[in-house]
Length: 235
Image 1 (cartoon, rainbow, N blue to C red):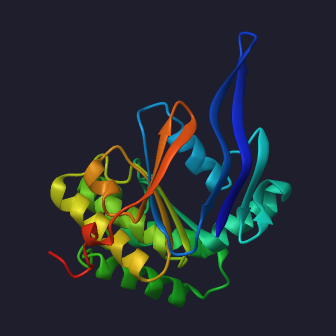
Image 2 (cartoon, rainbow, N blue to C red; image 1 turned 45 degrees about the vertical axis):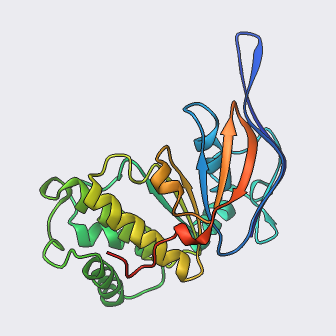
Protein backbone atom coordinates (compact mmCIF):
# COMPACT_ATOMS: atom_id res chain seq x y z
CA UNK A 1 0.00 0.00 0.00
CA UNK A 2 1.17 3.53 -0.82
CA UNK A 3 0.05 6.46 1.33
CA UNK A 4 0.60 10.20 1.06
CA UNK A 5 0.13 12.32 4.19
CA UNK A 6 -0.09 16.15 3.94
CA UNK A 7 2.31 16.20 1.01
CA UNK A 8 3.61 19.32 -0.71
CA UNK A 9 6.45 19.89 -3.15
CA UNK A 10 7.63 23.47 -3.51
CA UNK A 11 10.36 25.19 -5.49
CA UNK A 12 11.83 28.61 -4.74
CA UNK A 13 12.82 31.17 -7.34
CA UNK A 14 12.93 34.95 -7.72
CA UNK A 15 11.78 35.41 -4.17
CA UNK A 16 8.67 33.29 -4.68
CA UNK A 17 7.63 29.76 -3.83
CA UNK A 18 6.01 27.65 -6.51
CA UNK A 19 3.94 24.69 -5.35
CA UNK A 20 4.30 21.89 -7.88
CA UNK A 21 2.04 19.47 -6.01
CA UNK A 22 0.00 19.32 -2.83
CA UNK A 23 -2.30 16.70 -1.35
CA UNK A 24 -3.71 16.22 2.14
CA UNK A 25 -4.16 12.47 1.86
CA UNK A 26 -4.01 9.76 -0.78
CA UNK A 27 -4.02 5.98 -0.48
CA UNK A 28 -3.28 3.54 -3.28
CA UNK A 29 -4.20 0.03 -2.23
CA UNK A 30 -2.25 -3.09 -3.13
CA UNK A 31 -3.30 -4.34 -6.54
CA UNK A 32 -4.88 -1.09 -7.74
CA UNK A 33 -4.40 0.10 -11.31
CA UNK A 34 -4.30 3.90 -11.13
CA UNK A 35 -4.07 6.40 -13.99
CA UNK A 36 -2.85 9.93 -13.26
CA UNK A 37 -4.21 12.44 -15.76
CA UNK A 38 -4.23 16.20 -16.19
CA UNK A 39 -2.81 18.95 -18.39
CA UNK A 40 0.90 19.49 -18.88
CA UNK A 41 2.49 21.10 -15.84
CA UNK A 42 -0.22 19.88 -13.48
CA UNK A 43 2.16 17.90 -11.25
CA UNK A 44 1.74 14.38 -12.63
CA UNK A 45 5.42 13.54 -12.96
CA UNK A 46 6.18 15.27 -9.66
CA UNK A 47 3.66 13.03 -7.92
CA UNK A 48 4.98 9.90 -9.63
CA UNK A 49 8.56 10.78 -8.69
CA UNK A 50 7.62 11.24 -5.04
CA UNK A 51 5.72 7.94 -5.02
CA UNK A 52 8.82 6.23 -6.40
CA UNK A 53 11.26 7.60 -3.85
CA UNK A 54 13.06 9.73 -6.43
CA UNK A 55 11.95 13.22 -5.34
CA UNK A 56 11.66 14.21 -1.71
CA UNK A 57 8.60 16.28 -0.73
CA UNK A 58 9.01 19.66 0.92
CA UNK A 59 6.57 18.61 3.62
CA UNK A 60 4.65 15.46 4.51
CA UNK A 61 5.31 11.75 4.21
CA UNK A 62 5.20 9.04 1.57
CA UNK A 63 4.70 5.58 3.03
CA UNK A 64 5.18 2.29 1.19
CA UNK A 65 3.94 -0.68 3.20
CA UNK A 66 3.99 1.55 6.31
CA UNK A 67 7.63 2.56 5.77
CA UNK A 68 8.19 6.31 5.43
CA UNK A 69 10.37 6.54 2.31
CA UNK A 70 12.01 9.87 2.97
CA UNK A 71 12.82 9.10 6.59
CA UNK A 72 15.17 6.40 5.28
CA UNK A 73 18.78 6.85 4.25
CA UNK A 74 19.50 7.20 0.54
CA UNK A 75 20.84 3.63 0.50
CA UNK A 76 17.80 2.23 2.31
CA UNK A 77 15.43 4.09 0.01
CA UNK A 78 17.29 2.76 -3.02
CA UNK A 79 16.99 -0.76 -1.62
CA UNK A 80 13.22 -0.35 -1.23
CA UNK A 81 12.95 0.78 -4.85
CA UNK A 82 15.00 -2.18 -6.00
CA UNK A 83 12.99 -4.69 -3.99
CA UNK A 84 9.46 -3.39 -4.50
CA UNK A 85 9.30 -1.08 -7.53
CA UNK A 86 9.75 -1.10 -11.26
CA UNK A 87 9.84 2.01 -13.44
CA UNK A 88 8.76 2.56 -17.05
CA UNK A 89 9.57 5.82 -18.80
CA UNK A 90 8.73 7.41 -22.14
CA UNK A 91 12.46 7.40 -22.89
CA UNK A 92 13.66 3.82 -22.64
CA UNK A 93 17.10 4.50 -21.09
CA UNK A 94 18.60 1.37 -22.62
CA UNK A 95 22.38 1.06 -22.57
CA UNK A 96 23.33 1.41 -26.25
CA UNK A 97 26.36 -0.89 -26.27
CA UNK A 98 24.55 -3.79 -24.55
CA UNK A 99 22.27 -6.31 -26.24
CA UNK A 100 18.60 -6.61 -25.37
CA UNK A 101 19.40 -9.61 -23.17
CA UNK A 102 22.22 -7.79 -21.39
CA UNK A 103 20.05 -4.71 -20.80
CA UNK A 104 17.39 -6.83 -19.11
CA UNK A 105 20.02 -8.52 -16.96
CA UNK A 106 21.35 -5.22 -15.56
CA UNK A 107 18.93 -5.04 -12.57
CA UNK A 108 19.76 -8.66 -11.72
CA UNK A 109 23.43 -7.79 -11.27
CA UNK A 110 22.50 -6.47 -7.83
CA UNK A 111 20.75 -9.72 -6.87
CA UNK A 112 22.49 -12.76 -5.45
CA UNK A 113 21.82 -14.92 -8.49
CA UNK A 114 24.15 -16.97 -10.61
CA UNK A 115 24.93 -15.74 -14.11
CA UNK A 116 23.03 -18.74 -15.49
CA UNK A 117 19.87 -17.90 -13.53
CA UNK A 118 20.12 -14.23 -14.53
CA UNK A 119 20.35 -15.12 -18.20
CA UNK A 120 17.52 -17.64 -17.98
CA UNK A 121 15.16 -15.19 -16.28
CA UNK A 122 15.94 -12.38 -18.72
CA UNK A 123 15.60 -14.70 -21.71
CA UNK A 124 12.22 -16.01 -20.59
CA UNK A 125 10.82 -12.50 -20.23
CA UNK A 126 12.05 -11.39 -23.63
CA UNK A 127 10.63 -14.53 -25.25
CA UNK A 128 7.28 -13.91 -23.52
CA UNK A 129 7.33 -10.39 -24.99
CA UNK A 130 7.87 -11.70 -28.51
CA UNK A 131 11.56 -10.84 -28.76
CA UNK A 132 13.05 -14.32 -29.07
CA UNK A 133 14.79 -13.33 -32.32
CA UNK A 134 16.13 -10.06 -30.92
CA UNK A 135 17.96 -11.25 -27.79
CA UNK A 136 21.39 -10.27 -29.05
CA UNK A 137 20.43 -7.09 -30.91
CA UNK A 138 21.53 -3.73 -29.58
CA UNK A 139 18.96 -0.93 -29.08
CA UNK A 140 19.89 0.80 -32.35
CA UNK A 141 18.99 -2.42 -34.18
CA UNK A 142 15.49 -2.54 -32.67
CA UNK A 143 12.30 -0.70 -33.56
CA UNK A 144 10.85 1.79 -31.08
CA UNK A 145 8.21 -0.73 -30.03
CA UNK A 146 10.82 -3.43 -29.53
CA UNK A 147 12.95 -1.07 -27.44
CA UNK A 148 9.95 -0.36 -25.21
CA UNK A 149 9.37 -4.09 -24.75
CA UNK A 150 13.02 -4.54 -23.74
CA UNK A 151 12.58 -1.70 -21.25
CA UNK A 152 9.44 -3.40 -19.91
CA UNK A 153 11.28 -6.70 -19.54
CA UNK A 154 14.00 -4.89 -17.61
CA UNK A 155 11.30 -3.42 -15.35
CA UNK A 156 9.66 -6.79 -14.71
CA UNK A 157 12.76 -8.95 -14.31
CA UNK A 158 12.98 -8.30 -10.56
CA UNK A 159 9.27 -9.17 -10.14
CA UNK A 160 8.27 -5.77 -8.66
CA UNK A 161 4.97 -5.47 -6.85
CA UNK A 162 4.65 -1.77 -7.73
CA UNK A 163 5.03 -0.51 -11.30
CA UNK A 164 5.31 3.25 -11.89
CA UNK A 165 5.05 4.40 -15.50
CA UNK A 166 5.47 7.91 -16.94
CA UNK A 167 3.85 8.30 -20.39
CA UNK A 168 4.86 4.73 -21.32
CA UNK A 169 3.04 4.77 -24.67
CA UNK A 170 3.80 8.35 -25.70
CA UNK A 171 6.24 7.43 -28.49
CA UNK A 172 4.60 4.21 -29.68
CA UNK A 173 2.59 3.28 -32.76
CA UNK A 174 -0.89 1.80 -32.12
CA UNK A 175 0.28 -1.82 -32.36
CA UNK A 176 3.19 -1.37 -29.96
CA UNK A 177 0.97 0.64 -27.63
CA UNK A 178 -1.53 -2.21 -27.42
CA UNK A 179 1.27 -4.68 -26.63
CA UNK A 180 2.38 -2.51 -23.71
CA UNK A 181 -1.17 -2.04 -22.42
CA UNK A 182 -1.85 -5.78 -22.55
CA UNK A 183 1.27 -6.32 -20.45
CA UNK A 184 -0.05 -3.79 -17.93
CA UNK A 185 -3.41 -5.59 -17.91
CA UNK A 186 -1.64 -8.86 -17.16
CA UNK A 187 0.39 -7.26 -14.36
CA UNK A 188 -2.83 -5.95 -12.84
CA UNK A 189 -4.46 -9.36 -13.08
CA UNK A 190 -1.44 -10.81 -11.29
CA UNK A 191 -2.16 -8.51 -8.34
CA UNK A 192 0.56 -5.92 -8.91
CA UNK A 193 0.00 -2.24 -8.20
CA UNK A 194 0.25 0.02 -11.25
CA UNK A 195 0.43 3.81 -11.32
CA UNK A 196 0.52 5.25 -14.84
CA UNK A 197 0.88 8.91 -15.85
CA UNK A 198 -0.74 9.55 -19.23
CA UNK A 199 -2.27 12.17 -21.51
CA UNK A 200 -4.02 9.46 -23.51
CA UNK A 201 -7.67 8.79 -22.54
CA UNK A 202 -7.53 5.29 -24.04
CA UNK A 203 -4.63 4.46 -21.71
CA UNK A 204 -6.41 5.90 -18.67
CA UNK A 205 -9.49 3.81 -19.47
CA UNK A 206 -7.53 0.62 -18.85
CA UNK A 207 -7.06 1.58 -15.20
CA UNK A 208 -9.56 0.95 -12.42
CA UNK A 209 -9.10 4.37 -10.83
CA UNK A 210 -8.27 7.78 -12.23
CA UNK A 211 -6.60 10.66 -10.37
CA UNK A 212 -7.02 14.07 -12.02
CA UNK A 213 -4.52 16.84 -11.28
CA UNK A 214 -4.88 20.54 -12.06
CA UNK A 215 -2.27 23.15 -11.10
CA UNK A 216 -0.60 20.77 -8.68
CA UNK A 217 -3.82 19.84 -6.90
CA UNK A 218 -5.66 16.54 -6.82
CA UNK A 219 -9.11 17.67 -7.93
CA UNK A 220 -10.80 14.35 -8.60
CA UNK A 221 -10.42 10.67 -7.83
CA UNK A 222 -12.91 8.36 -9.47
CA UNK A 223 -13.41 4.67 -10.00
CA UNK A 224 -13.55 3.47 -13.61
CA UNK A 225 -16.07 0.84 -14.61
CA UNK A 226 -14.27 -2.51 -14.77
CA UNK A 227 -16.13 -3.30 -17.99
CA UNK A 228 -13.72 -0.93 -19.76
CA UNK A 229 -10.82 -3.22 -18.90
CA UNK A 230 -9.67 -5.68 -21.52
CA UNK A 231 -8.60 -9.13 -20.41
CA UNK A 232 -5.03 -10.16 -21.12
CA UNK A 233 -6.22 -12.58 -23.77
CA UNK A 234 -8.00 -9.91 -25.82
CA UNK A 235 -6.73 -9.20 -29.30
